[in-house]
Length: 471
Image (cartoon, rainbow, N blue to C red; front, side):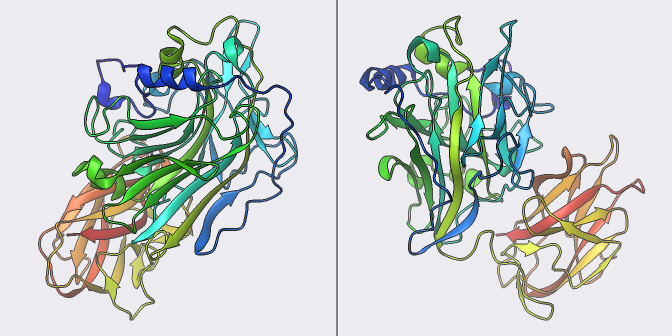
């Protein structure tokens, strides 16, 4: 269950709990119920009083169709481009965009099905949300919920099955070397057909750190009533920013089974995993790897493992309660005062030069086609009496190799000396977003702020979704 020692920091996501805990959970489980009928709800349940629905997918599309491209990215292959091999976990399958591996079943479910060909090669599917800005409103609560039936297979036939519903911090996209600092919430994991759900937090540094990487801070329990494999259960994760210290909580069918407090994680690690743009969600069924191998006590899958048992997902929903909005409020209309320390949406400029506005994969709009000498102006930005230490911009780039440039902050004129900047090159695509910080010299009071774009080449080199200043 340990990573390759040559590059521990590069290994992302989803290292497992200690073997002793896994084996304890295995011993405590019951045999799966065979032949139990399962059904899907027709729609995402209405939010309870006080909650608002932020985003959802109820997977009610026709049978044999792929998940909505507006909602989901289908990962393929055995790694992200430039990321660790075998997705950093030792899993052995190849992910595909084939409807044999991932498709709607026509009954209100998404089906993710591991398959094995005649040569013994495994394929499966992994999808992640287009949106990557899920986080609580300031002073509120975020809930991530899914109604899921794990693959209905147990015993020796289940060796190597690794279904999961989880979330990764958005700065992981296009970087792939910054785990676990960016944070990971495993809402539901299971291995080898055991009647147990694991909930895990990954954070900090690896190995070791506040989250005991590569294990994470985790807990597990049997599914209430029917086994995890034989029936649908509702798996839920809550990030509660309304309390001090903040809390992370895991539930199955409404029953709390794991809690981690902000004070347990501590600083700077809590801020590292919470002070970025948010999280994206993932659904996948892996085969083999560190977690199932550790529980089995040997390599999985085995000759006894049977292919073709799908994970069924009835719905996925993100909800919020209290606080403000998610993401933070956009700037007021031109003429209003803008808070320098709130999220300033880039498309809410007061004036611009050479800029286009387009639909953003993270929701809303972004400014794009930015190249040397382009700029956007933001009037009435209030810094107050305490100056910022830096600024952060949410940027993406599909620029060709060798093309890069600077995102700069200037005051009062697009030709003033910059008070801060950072360099940006290709992030993996024009909608592959990354939050990048840059130091700034002290500024106070109410000012006119320019974002300017400078490059040694004439090419487009960056898009911008939003920016903010931090004290």
